[in-house]
Amino acid sequence: MFGRERVEYKTPEQVRAMRAAGLLTHAALESVRAALRPGIALEELDAIGAEVIRAGGGTSNFLGYHGYPKTFCISVNEVVVHGIPGDRVLAEGDVVSVDGGCVVDGWHGDSAFTEIVGEPKDAGDVDLVEITRKAMWAGIAALDARGRVGDVGAAVEDAVDGRLGIVDGYTGHGIGTAMHMAPEVLNYRVREKGPKVKPGLVLAIEPMCTRGGIETDTLADDWTVVTSDGTRAAHWEHTVAVLDEGLWVLTAPDGGAAELAAFGVTVPSE
Image (cartoon, rainbow, N blue to C red; front, top):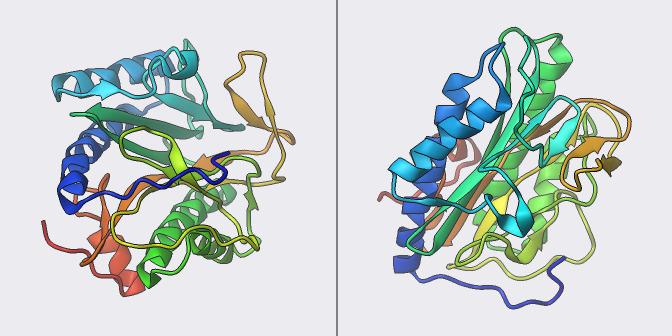
C-alpha cells in the first residue's frame, strides 16, 4: 500500500498540535457512542458526530475522501469497515463499529471503537469486541520497545492468539499532515519488519477481527467491506505518537495511561 514511501516524523511541537485533532476525534466518537440504541438510524448517528466536529472547529477527514459521502464509517455486524451510514436502523444485539476522524489546523486524527447495542446476542460477540480491543492496546504497547513497526502486528497476533480471524488486506497507517501515510502497519506477524520506531513516529493502529474467516468482499457501492462468511467483525483504532518520554495516545483523553499501565508503559504528562 505504502511501499518505500518516506515516513513523516514529527517534532514534539507538531505532536502537540496533533493532540487537538485527536481530542476532537475522541469527542465526536463519544457522542456517537452515547447515542447508540435500538431504533436509531445510522445516518442520524453520523449527523450527531458531524456536529461535534463542526462545533469544535474541525473538519471531517472522511467526508469527500476519494468521494466518500459521510463523516463516519459505521459498520454493523458482518460489515468489517467502510459502512456508509444510511437509513438502516440499529437493533438490539447489533455489533457496531464506528470509525472517524477530523482535521484541526492541518493535522489529522483517526480513531474507531466497536460497541454492542443493548444486550449482546451471545458471549461470542462480547469476546469479539474485547479481544480486538485488547489486541489494539497490545499493538500500541509494542511501540514502547522502540524496535520495528512490524512488532505491532506481532503483538496484535499474539494477543488474539488464534481466537479470532485477523482480517487480511486492511491495515493501520502513518498519520499526520494526511490521514493515510507511510508506513503501513499490519495486524499480524510478517518477515519484513518495516521502519524503525523512533521519536516523532505517529501511527494509527487498528486491528480488525472476525468470529470466522479472514476473507472479505466489497459490496457494489465500492466502499462497504463485509466478511465473506457472514460472521461478525470488530474494529478498534487509536492515533499514537512515539516521544522521547514515552508513548502518547492522541485520541485517548488520558493519553492511554490507564490501558498502557498494564503493559508497564509510561505515558508522559501533558
